[in-house]
Amino acid sequence: MKIGELASRAGVSPRLVRYYEAQSLLAPTRQANGYRSYDERHVERVRRIAGLVQSGLTTRLVKELLDLEDAAAEQRPSCPRTVADMLAHELDGIEERIACLTRSRDTIRDYLARTEHAAVLSERAAARG
Amino acid sequence: MKIGELASRAGVSPRLVRYYEAQSLLAPTRQANGYRSYDERHVERVRRIAGLVQSGLTTRLVKELLDLEDAAAEQRPSCPRTVADMLAHELDGIEERIACLTRSRDTIRDYLARTEHAAVLSERAAARG
DNA sequence: CTAAACTTTGACACTGATGTCAATGTCAAG
DNA sequence: CTTGACATTGACATCAGTGTCAAAGTTTAG
Image 1 (cartoon, rainbow over the protein chains, first blue to last red):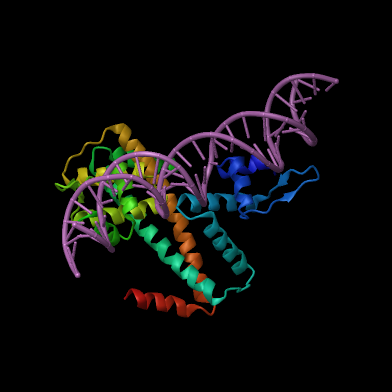
Image 2 (tube, each protein chain N blue to C red):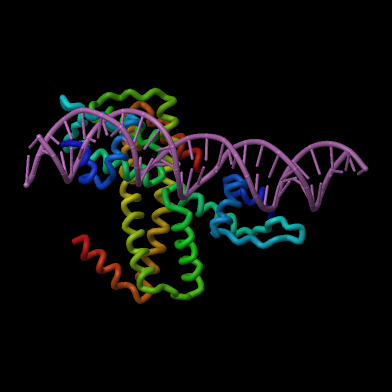
């Protein structure tokens, strides 16, 4: 599939897809005409990248993470001690973010539930199915 | 307490504290000499703001959130329907972020646990007490 | 064949969050 | 009184993430 389709399926702009590629987060093949060519797995990957970036991770860190997953998937444990330390440090940061967001989520939820807008919550639940 | 102490206790730069104030996230009183004056509750607030901003929320949204908490604390349910919808929408975004981060956290954790670096994890746990 | 829609690369622009620097004022210690 | 640490405001700089536009090639529909 070409960049337009990939982008729309992943819910981002083609521009962003190219940007991620420039950051070495994506490595599409090229068709004879020079067009980038993607497969199903790229859709998932782009969604994931966008999600992490929107969660405050830098593209640099997202790259580390995805590389990690790729390596793990291949049973290739290429992880020198310094990298492990860095990851452990990032892990702390991520956990803090989760805690922060969880608290905010609860705040909003409780608030909506308490005000006369409980309806909005059930609508949302219904909308998601 | 003055801005320097507040900043160091909250773990951010004075510059950032002023920036948050410019975004209406903070409203310190002023001493006679013009210096900003903060109390204990501001420390907590700044930590919270920084955490949320680093989690990808915009200062604009953080403001809504904190305003919300303030209102809730005063039993003042000032929430027109349109605001409720907006919050519900943000709630979705936050949940997605949490899911994304949680997955990444697990990835890192599993990875560290599986490689020979399990030691790093226990060190971290010990360091935190 | 032509027009519309999409792709390519590359440049320029903007926003939001921060750092940094400058000029000036305040305050506490020697 | 002077010096040094810290405060003030305001301007400018930077970085990441995106949008947007331009010029050119490609593919598809009519």
